[in-house]
Length: 224
Ligand SMILES: [Mn+2]
Image 1 (cartoon, rainbow, N blue to C red):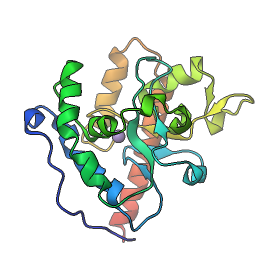
Image 2 (spheres, protein in one colour; image 1 turned 120 degrees about the horizontal axis):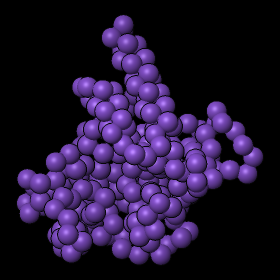
Image 3 (tube, rainbow, N blue to C red; image 1 turned 30 degrees about the horizontal axis):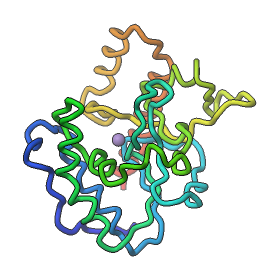
Image 4 (tube, rainbow, N blue to C red; image 1 turned 180 degrees about the vertical axis):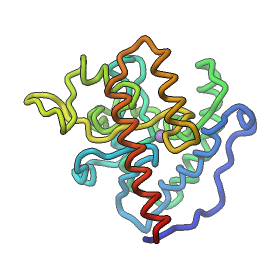
């Protein structure tokens, strides 16, 4: 496995440094745009599971990504940086990083007090919402909390529940501050869905699939 050491970290804007919590750790993601060692990258967050072969993404143009959650929230038009097709360019990471002050203004205008890499990338690619040619199907970045509604109401399917004419769920994204690999995650998730009024059967099912695979991987590592 090839490990690339990061150059200088990209600093999170001081205005939001205290408030940004786990998002404050995401700014290094911007360095992906400068990895000119590669002509094209398909980036995936580590809080995702891939259910189907997604090699086809290497045929997609720079900044292909998903406006994740848009079918449920029509005003969510910006790209989600959990999965992105990137063609790195010299100095591009720096140029994007330089827009963090504009991102701060945009986030404040929307009443937010947290900032992440995604806000900066969206500030740089401000025309992305109108670039329909870059919008991947939502099946490439589905929030685990939306699984029940996407399968129940928006025409999606998983491979173990094959129905003709439906759209594939290729990648599930475990968004939020509570990640499945954290301590007490399983218990906390149970409590959360127990209190929730929403359907949660598939959300729970895939949360457990993540845990199972995670356990398998860590057992493998420890046995070596
Ligand atoms: Mn993520």
